[in-house]
Image (cartoon, rainbow, N blue to C red; front, side):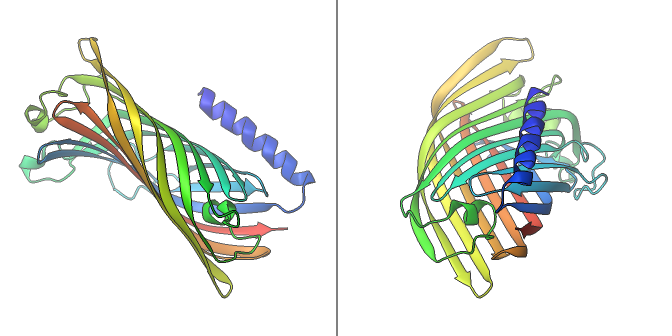
Length: 305
């Protein structure tokens, strides 16, 4: 709730500034989000898929920031499941300054379908209406090439896009909290994951550094923005069991992300498609790993003045 209020205040403040500043862009977008949760032990896996609806969004951006806020488009859930399809929440704030980028991201999901009863011949047929996942991220990216535009990569090409490629350094802090009072694992597959079968809450945190590469490639009135990064971080995880006992797990974790932006460029009206793919990988027990797999696909149009 506090995060929601803070982000709404930030959006309102930035929108007020946009009324007095020239050189701004307003973007309208439709987003398809995804946030799959995966447990892995040896060759065995359990996957939890969210039942999200499409999301509308509005974004205000200037030379040194962008802020995004949106809401669900009710009953457009693409999984056709009955639980969780209108529960997704998302907030994003970014500050691109030339070849530097600072981003804040928060998302919340409630309602998943899992393959815990996969032996019944039905894929992802077990409804998990009370399974809740909250994920937040703080990340900093710095391109070594000073002419590389983080605005064109992360937001839009309203300033025009020149060819550039660069190595990109990143620093990040990621946090994912997953909980279900009835147990994170339910159904027939619990016996395959004995070290985590009694978990009620899994709180995962990692702090790390990474390296990647970015490309901005204009062609005619359009351009391609592309980047890929991988990072290694220190993880500190908190595990809470159904009997309310607790334990901690520390060690190394990994993070990767890919961004793709294909759009028109220049002042006035623009349009494009954009994708953001990222994953966080953790070790939660001696023989069990956990991953949060995410993507956001955007279809957008914008106007710059």
